[in-house]
Image 1 (cartoon, rainbow, N blue to C red):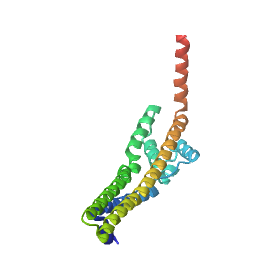
Image 2 (cartoon, rainbow, N blue to C red):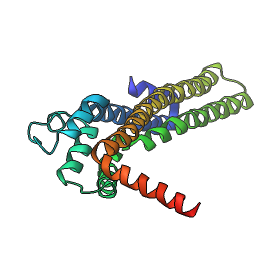
Image 3 (cartoon, rainbow, N blue to C red):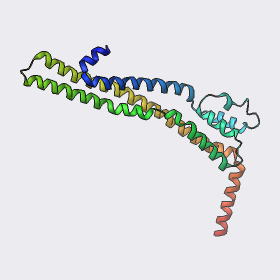
Length: 214
């Protein structure tokens, strides 16, 4: 089948096949990574685990739950942040270290989605050039059919590669965006939970300063 495609599509078949194999590899590899590392956040469950982490960290649900979000909070809380600022710094460091794992190779998948139709168009142009050359030499129907076939095959191949690449790219990024939003929400809730007294004192000082300046 691949040999027939190469014979029909011409030279453009090689970059199209390379793009197809790379697309399949990235989709399969990213799917495995997401199955292993991606978990949506149950906010109530996570907040309870965060509040009880220091008292029983070994049996805490954050240690038992798979996924990047649980790893980030588990590693952050193990460092025992003493203030809200420390907590933010540790959490930021963990997010910078671990969240890019989900985004790996997705930029290249998007590149394939964009370049595949262009390669197909290049094959179309190549096929049409061959067709017009045959017409100029007298119009052998068999050779004309080969040129038109090359044009149609490469166009179809470019679209067949581009559509799933674009679909999976947006699917993976939608899941990452959802996790980002959940992480931001959990960050605010966990700060309020862990450093409630510090937040109250900061708010009180701010109010006192406003009263004095007034």
